[in-house]
Length: 300
Length: 312
Image 1 (cartoon, chains in turn brown, green):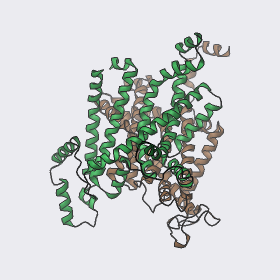
Image 2 (cartoon, each protein chain N blue to C red; image 1 turned 135 degrees about the horizontal axis):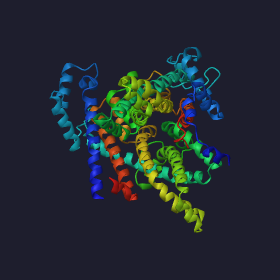
Image 3 (cartoon, each protein chain N blue to C red; image 1 turned 45 degrees about the vertical axis):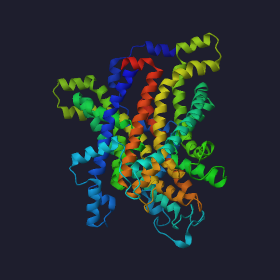
Image 4 (cartoon, one colour; image 1 turned 180 degrees about the vertical axis):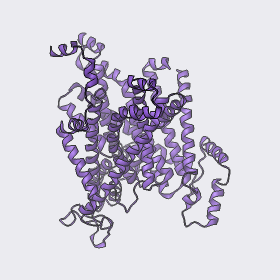
Protein backbone atom coordinates (compact mmCIF):
# COMPACT_ATOMS: atom_id res chain seq x y z
CA UNK A 1 0.00 0.00 0.00
CA UNK A 2 2.71 2.43 0.96
CA UNK A 3 4.46 1.70 -2.28
CA UNK A 4 1.37 2.60 -4.27
CA UNK A 5 1.09 5.90 -2.46
CA UNK A 6 4.71 6.67 -3.10
CA UNK A 7 4.32 6.02 -6.80
CA UNK A 8 1.10 7.96 -7.08
CA UNK A 9 2.51 11.04 -5.39
CA UNK A 10 3.90 13.37 -8.04
CA UNK A 11 7.57 14.05 -7.56
CA UNK A 12 8.15 17.80 -7.24
CA UNK A 13 10.67 18.92 -9.84
CA UNK A 14 12.33 21.38 -7.45
CA UNK A 15 13.14 18.56 -5.06
CA UNK A 16 15.22 16.78 -7.64
CA UNK A 17 17.06 19.92 -8.61
CA UNK A 18 17.78 20.92 -5.04
CA UNK A 19 18.88 17.48 -3.88
CA UNK A 20 22.47 17.84 -2.71
CA UNK A 21 25.06 15.75 -4.52
CA UNK A 22 25.99 12.81 -2.29
CA UNK A 23 29.30 13.68 -0.67
CA UNK A 24 32.35 11.46 -0.61
CA UNK A 25 31.61 10.62 3.04
CA UNK A 26 28.12 9.32 2.24
CA UNK A 27 29.57 7.28 -0.59
CA UNK A 28 32.21 5.65 1.61
CA UNK A 29 29.56 4.92 4.21
CA UNK A 30 27.26 3.34 1.64
CA UNK A 31 29.99 1.33 -0.04
CA UNK A 32 32.03 0.12 2.92
CA UNK A 33 30.19 0.37 6.21
CA UNK A 34 26.85 -1.01 5.08
CA UNK A 35 28.00 -4.63 5.03
CA UNK A 36 30.26 -6.83 7.11
CA UNK A 37 31.93 -8.31 4.04
CA UNK A 38 33.02 -4.93 2.69
CA UNK A 39 34.24 -3.81 6.13
CA UNK A 40 36.47 -6.89 6.29
CA UNK A 41 37.53 -6.28 2.69
CA UNK A 42 38.42 -2.68 3.48
CA UNK A 43 40.52 -3.78 6.46
CA UNK A 44 42.33 -6.29 4.23
CA UNK A 45 43.03 -3.64 1.59
CA UNK A 46 44.23 -1.20 4.26
CA UNK A 47 46.58 -3.83 5.73
CA UNK A 48 47.88 -4.62 2.25
CA UNK A 49 48.61 -0.94 1.56
CA UNK A 50 50.29 -0.50 4.96
CA UNK A 51 52.47 -3.57 4.42
CA UNK A 52 53.49 -2.31 0.98
CA UNK A 53 54.26 1.20 2.22
CA UNK A 54 56.18 0.09 5.31
CA UNK A 55 57.91 -2.89 3.67
CA UNK A 56 61.43 -1.72 4.62
CA UNK A 57 60.42 -1.53 8.28
CA UNK A 58 58.28 -4.67 8.39
CA UNK A 59 60.45 -7.13 6.47
CA UNK A 60 62.59 -9.05 8.96
CA UNK A 61 65.32 -9.80 6.39
CA UNK A 62 66.76 -8.45 3.16
CA UNK A 63 64.54 -10.03 0.46
CA UNK A 64 67.52 -10.51 -1.87
CA UNK A 65 70.05 -11.85 0.65
CA UNK A 66 70.99 -15.43 -0.21
CA UNK A 67 72.40 -17.97 2.19
CA UNK A 68 73.64 -21.45 1.33
CA UNK A 69 73.31 -22.79 4.85
CA UNK A 70 69.65 -21.84 5.03
CA UNK A 71 68.14 -23.17 1.78
CA UNK A 72 64.65 -24.69 1.66
CA UNK A 73 63.85 -24.34 5.33
CA UNK A 74 60.32 -25.01 6.56
CA UNK A 75 58.58 -22.33 8.60
CA UNK A 76 60.18 -21.63 11.99
CA UNK A 77 60.18 -18.83 14.56
CA UNK A 78 63.17 -17.40 12.73
CA UNK A 79 61.63 -17.60 9.24
CA UNK A 80 57.83 -17.56 9.55
CA UNK A 81 57.27 -18.78 6.00
CA UNK A 82 60.54 -20.66 5.66
CA UNK A 83 63.23 -19.99 3.08
CA UNK A 84 63.48 -20.61 -0.67
CA UNK A 85 65.98 -22.43 -2.90
CA UNK A 86 68.49 -19.61 -2.44
CA UNK A 87 68.07 -19.40 1.32
CA UNK A 88 66.12 -16.15 1.08
CA UNK A 89 63.46 -15.37 3.66
CA UNK A 90 60.07 -16.00 2.02
CA UNK A 91 58.15 -13.66 4.34
CA UNK A 92 60.46 -10.76 3.52
CA UNK A 93 60.07 -11.48 -0.18
CA UNK A 94 56.30 -11.56 0.21
CA UNK A 95 56.32 -8.23 2.04
CA UNK A 96 58.49 -6.55 -0.58
CA UNK A 97 56.49 -8.23 -3.34
CA UNK A 98 53.34 -6.47 -2.12
CA UNK A 99 54.88 -3.19 -3.34
CA UNK A 100 54.90 -4.49 -6.88
CA UNK A 101 51.26 -5.46 -6.70
CA UNK A 102 50.27 -2.12 -5.22
CA UNK A 103 52.19 -0.03 -7.76
CA UNK A 104 50.96 -1.90 -10.83
CA UNK A 105 47.52 -2.34 -9.33
CA UNK A 106 47.06 1.41 -8.99
CA UNK A 107 49.21 2.85 -11.75
CA UNK A 108 47.93 1.00 -14.81
CA UNK A 109 44.15 1.30 -14.22
CA UNK A 110 44.57 5.04 -13.54
CA UNK A 111 46.68 5.53 -16.66
CA UNK A 112 44.21 3.43 -18.64
CA UNK A 113 41.35 5.54 -17.26
CA UNK A 114 43.11 8.70 -18.45
CA UNK A 115 43.93 7.37 -21.92
CA UNK A 116 40.69 5.43 -22.41
CA UNK A 117 38.63 8.23 -20.88
CA UNK A 118 40.12 10.80 -23.24
CA UNK A 119 39.48 8.55 -26.22
CA UNK A 120 35.95 7.72 -25.10
CA UNK A 121 34.95 11.31 -24.31
CA UNK A 122 36.39 12.59 -27.58
CA UNK A 123 34.63 9.88 -29.58
CA UNK A 124 31.36 10.24 -27.72
CA UNK A 125 31.22 14.02 -27.71
CA UNK A 126 32.37 14.81 -31.23
CA UNK A 127 30.97 11.75 -32.98
CA UNK A 128 31.44 11.41 -36.71
CA UNK A 129 34.51 9.84 -38.23
CA UNK A 130 36.54 10.07 -34.98
CA UNK A 131 33.85 8.11 -33.19
CA UNK A 132 33.71 5.48 -35.91
CA UNK A 133 37.46 4.90 -35.88
CA UNK A 134 37.76 4.83 -32.09
CA UNK A 135 34.77 2.51 -31.71
CA UNK A 136 36.13 0.18 -34.33
CA UNK A 137 39.54 -0.05 -32.66
CA UNK A 138 37.93 -0.53 -29.24
CA UNK A 139 35.78 -3.35 -30.63
CA UNK A 140 38.80 -5.05 -32.12
CA UNK A 141 40.85 -4.78 -28.94
CA UNK A 142 37.89 -5.85 -26.80
CA UNK A 143 37.76 -9.07 -28.80
CA UNK A 144 40.98 -10.09 -27.05
CA UNK A 145 40.98 -11.22 -23.43
CA UNK A 146 43.09 -8.82 -21.36
CA UNK A 147 45.59 -11.48 -20.39
CA UNK A 148 46.15 -12.54 -23.98
CA UNK A 149 46.53 -8.93 -25.10
CA UNK A 150 49.01 -8.37 -22.28
CA UNK A 151 50.99 -11.49 -23.17
CA UNK A 152 51.08 -10.49 -26.83
CA UNK A 153 52.37 -7.00 -26.06
CA UNK A 154 54.79 -8.27 -23.44
CA UNK A 155 56.02 -10.81 -25.99
CA UNK A 156 56.91 -8.00 -28.37
CA UNK A 157 58.27 -5.52 -25.82
CA UNK A 158 59.93 -7.74 -23.23
CA UNK A 159 59.55 -7.24 -19.47
CA UNK A 160 60.71 -4.18 -17.56
CA UNK A 161 58.97 -1.84 -15.14
CA UNK A 162 57.65 0.61 -17.73
CA UNK A 163 56.91 -2.11 -20.24
CA UNK A 164 54.64 -3.84 -17.74
CA UNK A 165 52.93 -0.54 -17.06
CA UNK A 166 52.42 -0.05 -20.80
CA UNK A 167 51.21 -3.63 -21.24
CA UNK A 168 48.63 -3.43 -18.46
CA UNK A 169 47.52 0.04 -19.54
CA UNK A 170 46.94 -1.01 -23.13
CA UNK A 171 45.09 -4.09 -21.93
CA UNK A 172 42.68 -1.98 -19.87
CA UNK A 173 42.28 1.08 -22.13
CA UNK A 174 39.55 -0.30 -24.45
CA UNK A 175 37.22 -1.01 -21.53
CA UNK A 176 37.55 2.52 -20.19
CA UNK A 177 37.11 3.99 -23.65
CA UNK A 178 33.90 2.03 -24.17
CA UNK A 179 32.37 2.99 -20.81
CA UNK A 180 33.32 6.66 -21.03
CA UNK A 181 32.06 6.88 -24.61
CA UNK A 182 28.68 5.43 -23.63
CA UNK A 183 28.41 7.74 -20.62
CA UNK A 184 29.42 10.77 -22.69
CA UNK A 185 26.75 9.99 -25.27
CA UNK A 186 24.16 9.98 -22.48
CA UNK A 187 25.44 13.16 -20.82
CA UNK A 188 25.62 14.99 -24.15
CA UNK A 189 21.82 14.84 -24.41
CA UNK A 190 21.30 16.35 -20.96
CA UNK A 191 19.68 19.81 -20.84
CA UNK A 192 22.61 21.40 -18.99
CA UNK A 193 25.02 20.47 -21.77
CA UNK A 194 22.64 21.71 -24.43
CA UNK A 195 22.16 24.90 -22.42
CA UNK A 196 25.91 25.37 -22.18
CA UNK A 197 26.30 24.87 -25.91
CA UNK A 198 23.48 27.33 -26.59
CA UNK A 199 25.05 29.87 -24.22
CA UNK A 200 28.23 29.70 -26.27
CA UNK A 201 30.45 28.11 -23.63
CA UNK A 202 33.68 26.97 -25.17
CA UNK A 203 33.98 23.25 -25.88
CA UNK A 204 36.93 22.49 -23.52
CA UNK A 205 35.03 24.14 -20.68
CA UNK A 206 31.92 22.09 -21.44
CA UNK A 207 34.00 18.92 -21.53
CA UNK A 208 35.82 19.52 -18.26
CA UNK A 209 33.10 21.24 -16.30
CA UNK A 210 30.00 19.36 -17.45
CA UNK A 211 30.90 16.11 -19.14
CA UNK A 212 33.87 14.74 -17.18
CA UNK A 213 32.42 15.24 -13.66
CA UNK A 214 29.22 13.53 -14.73
CA UNK A 215 30.86 10.46 -16.19
CA UNK A 216 33.36 10.11 -13.33
CA UNK A 217 31.31 7.69 -11.23
CA UNK A 218 31.36 4.62 -13.51
CA UNK A 219 35.02 5.31 -14.30
CA UNK A 220 35.93 5.33 -10.61
CA UNK A 221 34.07 2.06 -10.08
CA UNK A 222 35.91 0.58 -13.04
CA UNK A 223 39.29 1.73 -11.72
CA UNK A 224 38.58 -0.08 -8.46
CA UNK A 225 37.48 -3.27 -10.17
CA UNK A 226 40.46 -3.22 -12.47
CA UNK A 227 42.91 -2.65 -9.66
CA UNK A 228 42.03 -6.22 -8.77
CA UNK A 229 42.49 -7.34 -12.37
CA UNK A 230 45.80 -5.47 -12.66
CA UNK A 231 47.17 -7.15 -9.55
CA UNK A 232 46.18 -10.57 -10.88
CA UNK A 233 47.49 -9.78 -14.34
CA UNK A 234 50.85 -8.53 -13.07
CA UNK A 235 51.13 -11.68 -10.96
CA UNK A 236 50.34 -13.82 -14.00
CA UNK A 237 52.89 -12.03 -16.19
CA UNK A 238 55.52 -12.33 -13.47
CA UNK A 239 54.64 -16.00 -13.11
CA UNK A 240 55.16 -16.44 -16.85
CA UNK A 241 58.53 -14.74 -16.51
CA UNK A 242 57.56 -11.73 -18.63
CA UNK A 243 56.64 -9.43 -15.77
CA UNK A 244 58.79 -8.47 -12.80
CA UNK A 245 62.23 -10.03 -13.28
CA UNK A 246 63.91 -12.11 -10.59
CA UNK A 247 65.63 -11.60 -8.22
CA UNK A 248 63.21 -8.70 -7.58
CA UNK A 249 60.35 -10.30 -5.64
CA UNK A 250 56.79 -10.25 -6.93
CA UNK A 251 53.99 -12.54 -5.77
CA UNK A 252 53.84 -14.05 -9.24
CA UNK A 253 57.50 -14.91 -9.54
CA UNK A 254 57.63 -16.16 -5.95
CA UNK A 255 55.07 -18.80 -7.03
CA UNK A 256 57.05 -19.52 -10.19
CA UNK A 257 60.28 -20.07 -8.28
CA UNK A 258 58.32 -22.07 -5.72
CA UNK A 259 56.98 -24.30 -8.47
CA UNK A 260 60.47 -24.96 -9.81
CA UNK A 261 61.44 -25.91 -6.27
CA UNK A 262 58.24 -27.70 -5.24
CA UNK A 263 59.95 -30.98 -4.40
CA UNK A 264 61.85 -29.20 -1.61
CA UNK A 265 59.22 -26.84 -0.14
CA UNK A 266 55.77 -25.70 -1.24
CA UNK A 267 55.41 -22.86 1.25
CA UNK A 268 56.32 -20.06 -1.18
CA UNK A 269 53.58 -21.26 -3.55
CA UNK A 270 50.90 -21.23 -0.84
CA UNK A 271 52.05 -17.88 0.55
CA UNK A 272 52.17 -16.11 -2.81
CA UNK A 273 48.91 -17.58 -4.07
CA UNK A 274 46.98 -16.85 -0.90
CA UNK A 275 48.19 -13.26 -0.85
CA UNK A 276 47.05 -12.67 -4.45
CA UNK A 277 43.71 -14.39 -3.88
CA UNK A 278 42.89 -12.51 -0.67
CA UNK A 279 43.86 -9.07 -1.97
CA UNK A 280 42.08 -9.53 -5.30
CA UNK A 281 39.01 -10.88 -3.51
CA UNK A 282 38.93 -7.90 -1.11
CA UNK A 283 39.34 -5.29 -3.82
CA UNK A 284 36.75 -6.85 -6.12
CA UNK A 285 34.25 -7.07 -3.24
CA UNK A 286 34.62 -3.32 -2.72
CA UNK A 287 34.56 -2.68 -6.48
CA UNK A 288 31.36 -4.72 -6.93
CA UNK A 289 29.69 -2.87 -4.10
CA UNK A 290 30.87 0.49 -5.45
CA UNK A 291 29.39 -0.33 -8.84
CA UNK A 292 26.08 -1.37 -7.29
CA UNK A 293 25.87 1.84 -5.26
CA UNK A 294 26.86 4.15 -8.10
CA UNK A 295 24.75 2.45 -10.70
CA UNK A 296 21.86 0.59 -9.08
CA UNK A 297 20.36 -0.39 -12.44
CA UNK A 298 23.07 -2.75 -13.59
CA UNK A 299 23.70 -4.24 -10.15
CA UNK A 300 21.66 -7.37 -9.44
CA UNK B 1 22.80 -17.95 -43.72
CA UNK B 2 25.56 -17.93 -46.35
CA UNK B 3 25.17 -14.17 -46.67
CA UNK B 4 25.41 -13.74 -42.93
CA UNK B 5 28.55 -15.86 -42.84
CA UNK B 6 30.11 -13.78 -45.62
CA UNK B 7 29.34 -10.52 -43.78
CA UNK B 8 30.86 -11.86 -40.58
CA UNK B 9 33.96 -13.05 -42.42
CA UNK B 10 34.41 -9.67 -44.09
CA UNK B 11 33.89 -8.05 -40.72
CA UNK B 12 36.73 -10.09 -39.23
CA UNK B 13 39.17 -9.02 -41.93
CA UNK B 14 40.03 -5.55 -40.51
CA UNK B 15 40.73 -7.16 -37.13
CA UNK B 16 43.13 -9.60 -38.74
CA UNK B 17 44.86 -6.81 -40.69
CA UNK B 18 45.08 -4.67 -37.54
CA UNK B 19 46.57 -7.53 -35.54
CA UNK B 20 49.13 -8.31 -38.22
CA UNK B 21 50.10 -4.66 -38.47
CA UNK B 22 50.40 -4.31 -34.70
CA UNK B 23 52.54 -7.43 -34.49
CA UNK B 24 54.72 -6.13 -37.29
CA UNK B 25 55.12 -2.71 -35.68
CA UNK B 26 55.81 -4.19 -32.27
CA UNK B 27 58.38 -6.69 -33.54
CA UNK B 28 60.22 -4.54 -36.06
CA UNK B 29 60.07 -0.98 -34.88
CA UNK B 30 59.47 -0.67 -31.17
CA UNK B 31 62.40 -2.42 -29.49
CA UNK B 32 64.96 -0.40 -31.43
CA UNK B 33 67.31 -2.66 -33.33
CA UNK B 34 65.69 -6.12 -33.60
CA UNK B 35 69.05 -7.70 -34.36
CA UNK B 36 70.53 -6.26 -31.18
CA UNK B 37 67.43 -7.25 -29.25
CA UNK B 38 67.62 -10.80 -30.55
CA UNK B 39 71.33 -11.40 -30.20
CA UNK B 40 72.06 -9.27 -27.14
CA UNK B 41 74.65 -6.62 -26.39
CA UNK B 42 77.56 -9.04 -26.65
CA UNK B 43 76.94 -9.85 -30.33
CA UNK B 44 79.74 -9.11 -32.79
CA UNK B 45 79.07 -6.66 -35.64
CA UNK B 46 79.42 -9.52 -38.18
CA UNK B 47 76.81 -11.55 -36.32
CA UNK B 48 74.45 -8.59 -36.30
CA UNK B 49 74.96 -8.05 -40.02
CA UNK B 50 74.34 -11.75 -40.73
CA UNK B 51 71.18 -11.72 -38.65
CA UNK B 52 69.87 -8.60 -40.42
CA UNK B 53 70.50 -10.19 -43.79
CA UNK B 54 68.86 -13.46 -42.78
CA UNK B 55 65.76 -11.79 -41.34
CA UNK B 56 65.49 -9.39 -44.27
CA UNK B 57 65.93 -6.39 -42.00
CA UNK B 58 67.95 -4.53 -44.64
CA UNK B 59 64.92 -4.33 -46.94
CA UNK B 60 62.76 -1.21 -46.93
CA UNK B 61 59.98 -1.32 -44.36
CA UNK B 62 57.09 -1.71 -46.84
CA UNK B 63 58.81 -4.70 -48.43
CA UNK B 64 59.37 -6.22 -44.99
CA UNK B 65 55.67 -5.76 -44.25
CA UNK B 66 54.62 -7.40 -47.50
CA UNK B 67 56.99 -10.28 -46.89
CA UNK B 68 55.68 -10.62 -43.36
CA UNK B 69 52.05 -10.75 -44.50
CA UNK B 70 53.00 -13.13 -47.31
CA UNK B 71 54.71 -15.36 -44.76
CA UNK B 72 51.65 -15.42 -42.54
CA UNK B 73 49.28 -16.13 -45.43
CA UNK B 74 51.42 -18.98 -46.77
CA UNK B 75 52.07 -20.19 -43.20
CA UNK B 76 55.79 -19.70 -43.67
CA UNK B 77 57.03 -18.34 -40.35
CA UNK B 78 60.73 -19.04 -40.96
CA UNK B 79 62.86 -21.19 -38.70
CA UNK B 80 63.70 -21.00 -35.00
CA UNK B 81 66.79 -18.92 -34.28
CA UNK B 82 67.89 -21.38 -31.61
CA UNK B 83 67.12 -24.83 -33.03
CA UNK B 84 66.70 -24.05 -36.75
CA UNK B 85 63.50 -26.12 -36.80
CA UNK B 86 60.81 -24.67 -39.11
CA UNK B 87 58.40 -22.70 -36.94
CA UNK B 88 55.36 -24.18 -38.68
CA UNK B 89 56.56 -27.62 -37.54
CA UNK B 90 56.75 -26.40 -33.93
CA UNK B 91 53.27 -24.92 -34.20
CA UNK B 92 51.89 -28.18 -35.61
CA UNK B 93 53.46 -30.18 -32.79
CA UNK B 94 52.04 -27.91 -30.13
CA UNK B 95 48.67 -26.62 -31.25
CA UNK B 96 46.79 -29.90 -30.85
CA UNK B 97 47.76 -30.01 -27.17
CA UNK B 98 46.51 -26.48 -26.60
CA UNK B 99 43.24 -27.15 -28.42
CA UNK B 100 42.80 -30.44 -26.55
CA UNK B 101 43.27 -28.63 -23.22
CA UNK B 102 40.92 -25.79 -24.17
CA UNK B 103 38.15 -28.06 -25.45
CA UNK B 104 38.24 -30.44 -22.48
CA UNK B 105 38.42 -27.50 -20.05
CA UNK B 106 35.46 -25.68 -21.62
CA UNK B 107 33.35 -28.87 -21.67
CA UNK B 108 34.18 -29.57 -18.03
CA UNK B 109 33.42 -25.94 -17.18
CA UNK B 110 30.00 -26.19 -18.82
CA UNK B 111 29.18 -29.51 -17.15
CA UNK B 112 30.10 -28.04 -13.76
CA UNK B 113 28.88 -24.48 -14.25
CA UNK B 114 25.42 -24.77 -15.80
CA UNK B 115 23.92 -27.12 -13.16
CA UNK B 116 25.43 -24.94 -10.43
CA UNK B 117 23.80 -21.88 -11.99
CA UNK B 118 20.45 -23.67 -12.27
CA UNK B 119 20.74 -24.75 -8.64
CA UNK B 120 21.45 -21.18 -7.55
CA UNK B 121 18.63 -19.72 -9.65
CA UNK B 122 16.01 -22.23 -8.48
CA UNK B 123 17.06 -21.59 -4.87
CA UNK B 124 17.23 -17.83 -5.14
CA UNK B 125 18.35 -16.06 -1.93
CA UNK B 126 18.80 -19.38 -0.16
CA UNK B 127 21.94 -21.27 0.81
CA UNK B 128 22.83 -22.63 -2.67
CA UNK B 129 22.53 -19.12 -4.12
CA UNK B 130 24.85 -17.59 -1.51
CA UNK B 131 27.27 -20.47 -2.02
CA UNK B 132 27.26 -19.77 -5.76
CA UNK B 133 27.99 -16.10 -5.07
CA UNK B 134 30.98 -16.94 -2.89
CA UNK B 135 32.17 -19.53 -5.42
CA UNK B 136 31.98 -16.93 -8.21
CA UNK B 137 33.93 -14.37 -6.17
CA UNK B 138 36.66 -16.80 -5.17
CA UNK B 139 36.76 -18.19 -8.71
CA UNK B 140 37.43 -14.69 -9.95
CA UNK B 141 40.09 -13.91 -7.37
CA UNK B 142 42.18 -17.09 -7.37
CA UNK B 143 44.83 -17.07 -10.12
CA UNK B 144 44.70 -20.09 -12.45
CA UNK B 145 48.38 -20.89 -12.01
CA UNK B 146 47.97 -20.96 -8.23
CA UNK B 147 44.97 -23.30 -8.35
CA UNK B 148 46.90 -25.44 -10.85
CA UNK B 149 49.90 -25.57 -8.55
CA UNK B 150 47.73 -26.66 -5.60
CA UNK B 151 46.06 -29.41 -7.65
CA UNK B 152 49.46 -30.50 -8.95
CA UNK B 153 50.99 -30.69 -5.48
CA UNK B 154 48.01 -32.46 -3.90
CA UNK B 155 46.91 -34.90 -6.59
CA UNK B 156 50.10 -35.55 -8.55
CA UNK B 157 52.94 -35.01 -6.11
CA UNK B 158 51.43 -36.16 -2.82
CA UNK B 159 48.69 -38.61 -3.81
CA UNK B 160 50.25 -39.72 -7.10
CA UNK B 161 46.85 -40.04 -8.81
CA UNK B 162 47.87 -38.09 -11.90
CA UNK B 163 51.08 -37.72 -13.90
CA UNK B 164 53.20 -34.68 -13.09
CA UNK B 165 53.85 -33.60 -16.66
CA UNK B 166 53.56 -34.53 -20.34
CA UNK B 167 50.55 -35.23 -22.54
CA UNK B 168 50.38 -39.03 -22.80
CA UNK B 169 49.57 -41.32 -25.73
CA UNK B 170 46.30 -42.91 -26.75
CA UNK B 171 42.91 -41.57 -25.74
CA UNK B 172 42.66 -42.63 -22.09
CA UNK B 173 46.26 -41.80 -21.29
CA UNK B 174 45.80 -38.37 -22.87
CA UNK B 175 42.66 -37.75 -20.85
CA UNK B 176 44.54 -38.84 -17.74
CA UNK B 177 47.23 -36.27 -18.49
CA UNK B 178 44.86 -33.47 -19.47
CA UNK B 179 42.51 -33.96 -16.52
CA UNK B 180 44.18 -31.79 -13.88
CA UNK B 181 45.17 -28.90 -16.18
CA UNK B 182 41.66 -28.88 -17.65
CA UNK B 183 40.07 -29.11 -14.20
CA UNK B 184 42.08 -26.06 -13.12
CA UNK B 185 40.67 -23.95 -15.92
CA UNK B 186 37.22 -25.55 -15.69
CA UNK B 187 36.79 -24.80 -11.98
CA UNK B 188 37.50 -21.13 -12.55
CA UNK B 189 35.31 -20.91 -15.65
CA UNK B 190 32.46 -22.81 -13.99
CA UNK B 191 32.36 -20.03 -11.38
CA UNK B 192 31.83 -17.49 -14.15
CA UNK B 193 29.44 -19.68 -16.16
CA UNK B 194 27.45 -20.61 -13.08
CA UNK B 195 26.90 -16.98 -12.18
CA UNK B 196 25.95 -16.19 -15.77
CA UNK B 197 23.52 -19.13 -15.98
CA UNK B 198 21.89 -17.96 -12.76
CA UNK B 199 21.40 -14.41 -14.07
CA UNK B 200 20.06 -15.39 -17.50
CA UNK B 201 17.83 -18.10 -16.08
CA UNK B 202 16.32 -15.76 -13.48
CA UNK B 203 15.59 -13.26 -16.23
CA UNK B 204 13.85 -15.88 -18.36
CA UNK B 205 11.91 -17.46 -15.50
CA UNK B 206 9.80 -14.35 -15.12
CA UNK B 207 8.47 -14.53 -18.69
CA UNK B 208 4.93 -15.41 -19.73
CA UNK B 209 5.75 -18.69 -21.44
CA UNK B 210 7.18 -20.02 -18.19
CA UNK B 211 3.89 -19.18 -16.45
CA UNK B 212 2.03 -20.86 -19.31
CA UNK B 213 4.17 -23.96 -18.97
CA UNK B 214 3.51 -24.06 -15.23
CA UNK B 215 -0.20 -23.46 -15.80
CA UNK B 216 -0.31 -26.41 -18.18
CA UNK B 217 0.90 -28.48 -15.26
CA UNK B 218 4.37 -29.22 -16.58
CA UNK B 219 6.67 -30.55 -13.93
CA UNK B 220 9.11 -28.02 -12.43
CA UNK B 221 12.12 -29.93 -13.79
CA UNK B 222 10.71 -29.71 -17.29
CA UNK B 223 9.85 -26.05 -16.88
CA UNK B 224 13.36 -25.19 -15.74
CA UNK B 225 15.32 -27.24 -18.25
CA UNK B 226 13.02 -27.30 -21.30
CA UNK B 227 11.46 -23.85 -21.18
CA UNK B 228 13.82 -21.86 -18.99
CA UNK B 229 17.34 -23.03 -19.71
CA UNK B 230 16.76 -23.33 -23.44
CA UNK B 231 15.86 -19.68 -23.69
CA UNK B 232 18.59 -18.68 -21.28
CA UNK B 233 21.12 -20.30 -23.61
CA UNK B 234 21.16 -17.31 -25.92
CA UNK B 235 22.82 -14.79 -23.59
CA UNK B 236 24.81 -17.72 -22.27
CA UNK B 237 26.35 -18.46 -25.66
CA UNK B 238 28.20 -15.12 -25.54
CA UNK B 239 29.44 -16.10 -22.12
CA UNK B 240 30.59 -19.44 -23.46
CA UNK B 241 32.52 -17.62 -26.18
CA UNK B 242 34.16 -15.44 -23.55
CA UNK B 243 34.95 -18.56 -21.55
CA UNK B 244 36.62 -20.22 -24.50
CA UNK B 245 38.81 -17.15 -24.96
CA UNK B 246 39.60 -16.90 -21.26
CA UNK B 247 40.41 -20.60 -21.18
CA UNK B 248 42.67 -20.16 -24.18
CA UNK B 249 44.61 -17.36 -22.51
CA UNK B 250 44.59 -19.22 -19.21
CA UNK B 251 46.11 -22.22 -20.94
CA UNK B 252 49.41 -20.33 -21.23
CA UNK B 253 50.04 -20.29 -17.47
CA UNK B 254 48.49 -23.72 -16.93
CA UNK B 255 50.70 -25.32 -19.57
CA UNK B 256 53.67 -23.90 -17.70
CA UNK B 257 52.45 -25.20 -14.32
CA UNK B 258 51.86 -28.71 -15.60
CA UNK B 259 54.89 -28.64 -17.86
CA UNK B 260 52.68 -29.50 -20.82
CA UNK B 261 53.60 -28.74 -24.40
CA UNK B 262 51.37 -26.21 -26.15
CA UNK B 263 51.34 -22.90 -27.98
CA UNK B 264 51.41 -20.97 -24.70
CA UNK B 265 54.51 -22.67 -23.39
CA UNK B 266 56.12 -22.42 -26.82
CA UNK B 267 55.47 -18.67 -26.85
CA UNK B 268 56.68 -18.05 -23.31
CA UNK B 269 59.84 -20.11 -23.84
CA UNK B 270 60.49 -18.22 -27.07
CA UNK B 271 60.11 -14.89 -25.24
CA UNK B 272 62.80 -16.00 -22.77
CA UNK B 273 65.11 -17.12 -25.55
CA UNK B 274 64.30 -14.09 -27.71
CA UNK B 275 63.45 -16.45 -30.54
CA UNK B 276 61.67 -13.82 -32.62
CA UNK B 277 60.25 -15.96 -35.46
CA UNK B 278 58.50 -18.17 -32.89
CA UNK B 279 57.20 -15.18 -30.88
CA UNK B 280 55.83 -13.66 -34.07
CA UNK B 281 54.15 -16.90 -35.12
CA UNK B 282 52.81 -17.59 -31.62
CA UNK B 283 51.25 -14.14 -31.44
CA UNK B 284 49.66 -14.56 -34.88
CA UNK B 285 48.28 -18.00 -33.98
CA UNK B 286 46.71 -16.76 -30.75
CA UNK B 287 45.23 -13.75 -32.52
CA UNK B 288 43.84 -16.01 -35.25
CA UNK B 289 42.30 -18.31 -32.64
CA UNK B 290 40.64 -15.33 -30.94
CA UNK B 291 39.17 -14.10 -34.22
CA UNK B 292 38.03 -17.64 -35.03
CA UNK B 293 36.31 -18.14 -31.68
CA UNK B 294 34.52 -14.79 -31.97
CA UNK B 295 33.38 -15.75 -35.44
CA UNK B 296 32.08 -19.08 -34.18
CA UNK B 297 30.15 -17.37 -31.39
CA UNK B 298 28.50 -15.08 -33.96
CA UNK B 299 27.57 -18.08 -36.06
CA UNK B 300 26.14 -20.03 -33.14
CA UNK B 301 24.15 -16.94 -32.23
CA UNK B 302 22.72 -16.76 -35.75
CA UNK B 303 21.92 -20.47 -35.75
CA UNK B 304 20.15 -20.34 -32.40
CA UNK B 305 18.31 -17.07 -32.93
CA UNK B 306 16.95 -16.35 -36.43
CA UNK B 307 16.37 -12.69 -35.48
CA UNK B 308 20.11 -12.06 -35.51
CA UNK B 309 20.38 -13.27 -39.10
CA UNK B 310 17.54 -11.13 -40.36
CA UNK B 311 18.53 -7.90 -38.63
CA UNK B 312 22.08 -7.80 -39.96
